[in-house]
Amino acid sequence: MLRSSTLVLLLATVVALSNATAYDGYKIFEVVPRTQEQADFLFELSKNEEFYDFFALKKMPNHVARVMVVPNEEENFLNALASMDLSHRVINENVGRTIEQEFQVNKLLRNLSPSDGKGRLSTDRYYSHGEINAYIDDLASRYPSRVFVKKVGRSYEGRDIKTITITNGDGRSGKNIIFMDGGFHAREWISPAAVLYTIDQLVENFAENADLLLDYDWMILPVVNPDGYEHTQTSTLARIWRKTRQPYKYLGQTCYGADPNRNFDFHWNEEGASSNPCSDTFAGPTAFSEPETMVVRDLMHSLKGRGVMYLTIHSYGNYLLYPWGWTSDLPDTWEDLDEVARAGGDAIYEATGTVYSVGSSTNVLYIAAGASDDYAFYAGFPISITMELPGGGVTGFDPPASSINGFVTETWIGIRAMAKKVVQKYPTVRVSFL
Image: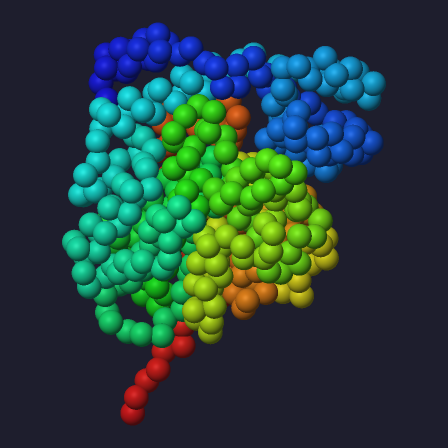
């Protein structure tokens, strides 16, 4: 851990370095619609992505909406709110300066605590994709009978995408599988952090978690979207980037990336997705246009007959969501999905008091067709859950490094409880020989 005197010096340095240009003058507002009409109005407003970036928004009243507004649009925005009798409060006066300060802190923490990929990772800072791959490679070398790393593809920009499979080392084949991933959306740094902590608990704290590996193996993909994730670490302008990085031409300009969580071939490019390459929810020119989503698809199908739970970690919003995301209808087996998700939510609430909303994606949050959790359920995983972690920092997507440990340890409580419920509900069939 860093000494307090070092942190004081670090923060002083950050303030001195902070001369924001990216997002300079942008403000973040919180608005709470009290009627359905007001909620619908905000939802329509959110479609104007050129001027507004809604970080939190539900199509229901009495839920906080958080939006970043382009400076030259602020007057129109405030007039629009007034016309609908919507009150507001400013929660950040200059997003650029705040992001620059956070960016510099993370940069300094990386320099103060370099990682060579050997040994356990701390929860003191965020890690690069290269550091994450080095870490799981090191685990495989230190625990060769229990941990197996495999290169399963390459990103558009050529980064290796790897999975880590964790077992108890008994050599028994044919066990059921929990498939977990993180880092779908580039700006959600806390997602890979939570996945790394899960890996640490299953491998380094094996004795405490042996029950989760007795009859189950875990296959984990720490960063689905490495190009986007790395892009967000290059500058303050890139920090809140969401998509992949494959370029697309549109109306004479180049727009980068697709939303990987709208790119799956199940009700692809329906409601909640966009056909505009410049949109944050661009579904891609075709389903599975992104090499990163093809990797996830192929992994899902490779687990046919063994894959029981698909768990994808996102942020933010305190949600445990299950299919469907393309419609408000519920699957026939929704009660099984709900039982597992509530096991996680209840465990977290009992341990920390943090409340998670549980339900189908469309009914709890909003409609979003072409998502990975819907596809996994369609592909045969009886349990498929998206876990949206709590928000932090100015945008909600940027919890400060000082809060990583609290976030990931709380998240593990929920993950462990859901895994225990899955192991109980869907036991691996043991083959016995006479």
